[in-house]
Image (cartoon, rainbow, N blue to C red; front, side, top):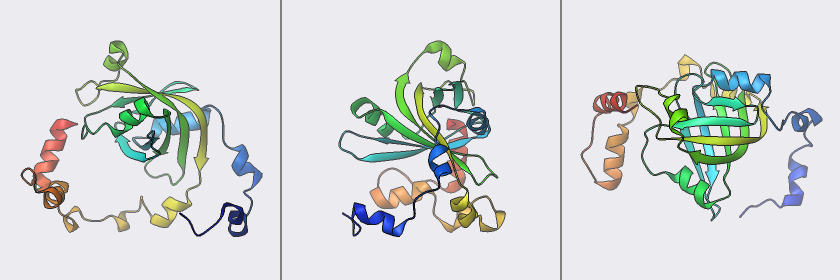
Length: 201
């Protein structure tokens, strides 16, 4: 599976600085809480019982993931592709998840690990209305570890720099690409998709 044996890793990579290990916290502190409150986007990863991994982009208004306590996050589930890969993993797998939070303009990211469960509390869901819609469910995540990740990857990619932004027109719309792949449904232009997405948020 790999050309490198486990006992060879430290011949390639030096021992991490003690601070890199010590920065991992068992709960959210004031810095990680503030970062989450500023974040409109994160990536949520989960694993199934067969070891397969799913990573799903999640977004909303700034601070869309609610900090219920230093040990609990609440993420509203918005309309998507209905594959429910994440939720199937939670039901059948270990329930362990990891999130990486992004804040536009800041190169550092925040990693949060935890154990998740899906809840449908009507009062909670009503309090998380956004875009004129209630969430379909809420993901409650019991935090087990949180730590900041350095900004070198985003600095290398210049992710937030206007000069590297790609014009949408260089690629077909996602509808056109999926139609080419599956020959199912009718392809939609990017303009049509933009209108549909705004209605479905």
